[in-house]
Length: 306
Image (cartoon, rainbow, N blue to C red; front, side, top):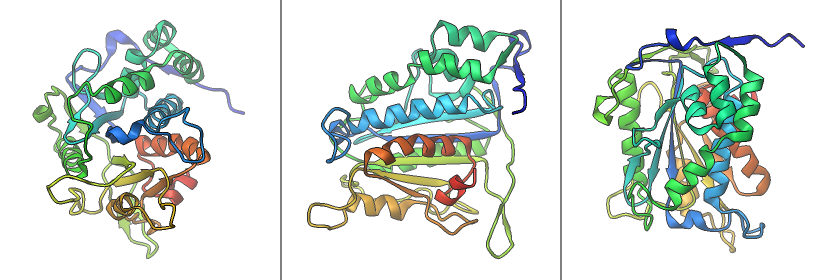
């Protein structure tokens, strides 16, 4: 096994806080409606809610992301939606647009912070510290379950959620986040193009959106997919949390909606849709979030190849 290299970080030489070199960006679009307080799966005792399942998966994905070499250039934003959709804020009340390094520093404990500010640290040591001390999952659970953003958990407005997600993605592509109150100049690094089964190449920007839901759009405004016209291909992946069929074997409308909204991967021609309907797949959700935040693919086959 090759020796693990240390990661260099000199605080006094840090990049201008108003600029952000972005090698990967993902916006997680989180269903925070009241139904997310229900038991994760019918086959499980009511010891874990759907919301707890999701926030633990996000925490786990970030623990894995610490092992990458891009913790200061991989960025994440989090949107919560109910009747309304809003960009999450951090503990200081600032918009949640953060690098993995920023997240480890803010949501880790003393050991995590100490590792981050070291001039030299190893990724495995940093991951161990964050895994032991990380509180991002607890923070998300509190923000969403208590509706700290005021989104109104009494409904599910998928249209509003996707619209806000697309606006944020577009802002990153335009290198201007000022409409969201974020004073950063974004420099987006291209990624290798996707190769189609026909041998063509498709240049997909190094951004991803990941939305999950456990229900269906139930607001007066029509369901619309703001990513449908994105060129050259939509970067929207989707997941349904819960059983996709009812007791009579009929497919649930919410699952059908999530499947319909998902991108079609240009490399494998698969839908970027994931069904999370049992405890085993609940653990798999962490890996899906990890793939999305790592912007390494768009479908299950992409994930299998990572």
